[in-house]
Length: 565
Image (tube, rainbow, N blue to C red; front, side, top):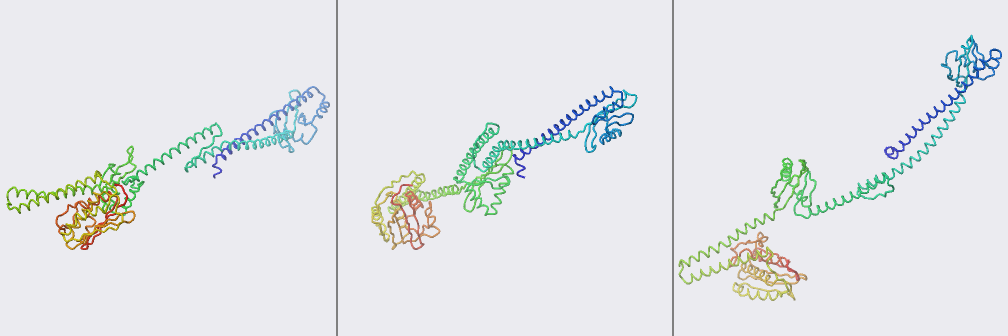
């Protein structure tokens, strides 16, 4: 079947059919032409011979002399008054018998199959020139003509066969010359379909050569377009992969056609939740039905997602729906944190302001007159003012850290010198509260890069917290050790400790543990948040280990050499 479908076979069969038809028609025409020519020549000879016989008959009136003369002629029969005068051969008798029976019509006719031969017969009626019936019959054997025709036919057949072979060879040569570049074009087209782009050599300037040039140009254009499409596809894929939003594309039958990495992750996560996934599919069907964009918020576990549906249509034909999934958890948490921050600041500021206002009115209205009471109230007013001032300063510090405008001077400093100053500052307070204060330096060279003032602030906050959550007889220890690339700073106490449920949240803004277990002044809930922010700006980490009733350890890890984050 493949051979019959080949262009070469079809062209070859077409050429052979045309040549064969032409040869057959030409052979038939030539054969008929030669036969008619020879028959016409024979008829002309018969006419000449019978004309000569007529002259003899009409010029001689002696019957015996006439008969003797005519009987010397071959293939001649004389009919007179119902009698046949001839050489009395079997052929003469058969022809005469066939004529008498009426086989021939006209003056010249053919008689076939007489003793295996065909004859052309010419009859001349001379009854008008005599008183009795008189006719001359002359005939010729056509065997020589048939043999000549057979020879001519063989020559025509042989010539046709030779011409057939020549035509076949020429046809194959011509067809190969024509089809070879076509086959090359076909093979190149299949390679192009497989992504292999090759340029075909142009060997002629005819129509096939022009077709080859057009194919090469088309091939180059296709390669260029495919490369451009691949580039755009890769670029689009990189863009879709790099963005944090999930991108999914569904057709009108709610079948997923495309998704980036984030979108595929969220899609698989939704498929695991049957009810959520069914509602999600129904939402897409509604978008397909009404062809209106929509935005909704979906909560998946502890994450908040925003689903943005956009129908894709052109010329009122809907192709599918694009879904953009954006994780708005941080935005929601930020908004929640902002609301809580405002509420906490308002609450923290309200208490000292109420106390300031109340005690100020008491002093103004002379409600208290005793010097000791006045001094006590003035002390309370000063403490609450200091508390408000501390809170405002901490809020300013947090704002600067969040915006990155807070200046850090990270340079080489002596941590041992900082420990000496901290010991001098806190030792008296701790001795007054009955707390043992220890410094452990397991570092032969405690000099490394850090911001002196900021680390001083960190340790001051940690020591203040340790003092508030310890009692008489407890210990507070601050130490440093070298681990090679890092410096490990620890602030340990044997105080009340922190419950496990509070440990993960102590670094949040305004978060406070139970204040009933603290000594003296209450904190603002911002100190540990500031501590963690400062440590992060040093490219370090801070860890908390605490056992309720067994003390607390804050472990700070700082690199020896670093730059501000």
